[in-house]
Amino acid sequence: MIGKFRRLYDDEHRPAFDWMLITAALAAISQGVAFALTVPVLTALFESRPGDAWPWLFALVIAAIVYAVLHYTSLTIGYSAGAQLARIVHHRLGDHVVALPLGWFTERRTGELSQLASQNVVQLMRVAAMQVRPLINAIVVPLTVFAAMLLFDWRMALAGALAVPVVAVAYRLFGNLISRTDHTVDAASAQASGRVVEFARNQPVLRAFGQREHGGQLLEDSLRRQHDTGRAQIVSGSVGLTGYIVVLQAAFVWLLLAGVYLALDGTLATPELLGLLVLAVRFVEPLIHAADDGATLRIAGNTIDRVEKVLAERPLPQPENPQVPEDASIELRDVRFGYDDDPVLDGVSLRVPPGGLTALVGPSGSGKTTITRLIARFHDAWDGGVLIGGVDVREMTTETLMSQLSLVFQDVFLFEGTIEENVRIGRADATDDELREAARRARVDEIVARLPDGWNTRVGEGGWTLSGGERQRVSIARALLKDAPIVLLDEATAALDAHNSSAVTDAIAELTSHRTVLVIAHDLNTVAHADEIVLLSDGRIAERGTHAELLAGGGDYARFWSYRDQSNSWQLGAAR
Ligand SMILES: Nc1ncnc2c1ncn2[C@@H]1O[C@H](COP(=O)(O)OP(=O)(O)OP(=O)(O)O)[C@@H](O)[C@H]1O
Image (cartoon, rainbow, N blue to C red; front, side, top):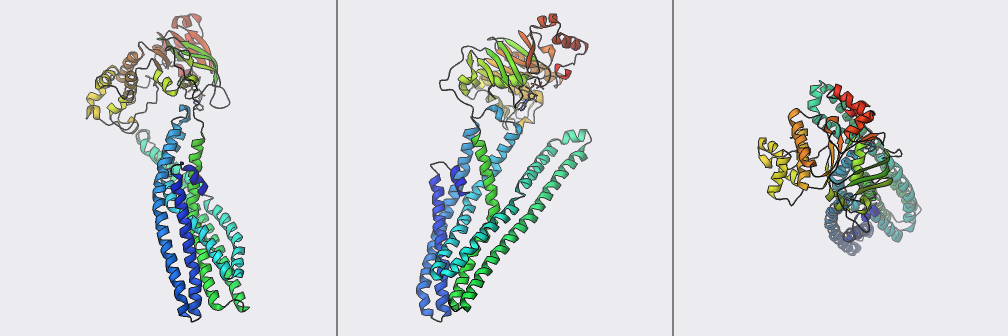
């Protein structure tokens, strides 16, 4: 456990943690020595030689002072080492995840990462600061007491040593019982907090569909599950803790019996026996505390395992000799790729020349979004190549690649901040005039005009104060401000109201003029003017050509187009 903590520290701060360990160990030794010194003091008093007790008492006071100083030192070093740990773990996680492929950031993983980096790391900091020392105490104090027993009476020390394996086995067995439900309790708590957020967020939907009770029922179920697992944890935890303490008491009784036997035998004087029994109590005491702290330490151990798992994720390999693209073309050469064992794209080749517009169409799940993700290097292709400006994306740095691309996807994320800050993410050093111009072209100025604080209006977490169409316009303004030569666009105007839809269409027209564009089109009406239309089906290109060529070809595209004529609202995605 201590090794796990040490591994988390960097070379600069590990010595502070080591100092905390050393001072804590020295404090524990001095505490053990102080306990041991009670034996000659008690012996002298019980043998009616109070004068003999003074030197031992004096030594005991010195040991107690040394203990107090060392304890205080390790406490203060521990606090600062704990605070450092939170900072280091945050930095290490931050530095590592920025190098991970964007495809790693699924909703589940980002949720777990955010819990890990916030709540769990703070717990880790507390454990490093406050709970590692008691663990050292639980090991070093009994060892010191044992050494002292050896000096006073080796037979009592031997009796103590015989009890140690039994206590160790009990610690492990009952410890497992205590921690057995940790994972189920963690999972139930995570699920319950997720349900609370979901219930609050989905109030409008639940009420609109008269499902308030259904949503409440789900929440209630998971709260009940949390309650039940919590109760099971208390029961098995109490059984485990009680069992362990009973074994410790039995170990003490065993020492008592050994001492009484030796006393009756006449080989151990009664005053010495009393002193040794007081020492035996001190032997057992830190072990009881160890049981209390064990559960917290195990949880900290789990957290460290999770941090290490994230740190072990393979970062996106960076090229040794980075190259820069020659132009703004996009090319896929015989690309194969899948998220698990089955390929999602199976031999896809396409080329968008600089300034060209290619539309990807196809049924839902045919792999359109996956193509855009490979171009932005969310993942690397299994086989084949993805090239920008004639250079494989694996041969350029992430910065170079990202400087070439603007991504406008459906799930727009806005940060908690003002609307101006959200547009400025497009290019941090843009002048105010450039920012206003991009906003005007994306028709964000219309949104700003109706907001109470104009540009300084805060958009709320995830941008919830704005409508879906408004969020898309903000994301298009970002892309206009960034002014990258290639645009990857997931066009989705179908779900928008008429006003927003026309505003988004205008904004997209601004964004796509004079740029290389690869657009995922959900509505066939918007693709007719593309230079090339690529129809994907099951991860392969089924048809390709201009609108006129595809209509003349009389294939699936032509068929879908004629359906579209019959029903204006028809969409390709719904054809599956
Ligand atoms: N992160 C992921 N992990 C596992 N499978 C995924 C992942 N993303 C997509 N898939 C799967 O890959 C296939 C292609 O998905 P993709 O999103 O590329 O299709 P699409 O044509 O863009 O669909 P839509 O039009 O519905 O957005 C689908 O079967 C999908 O379930």
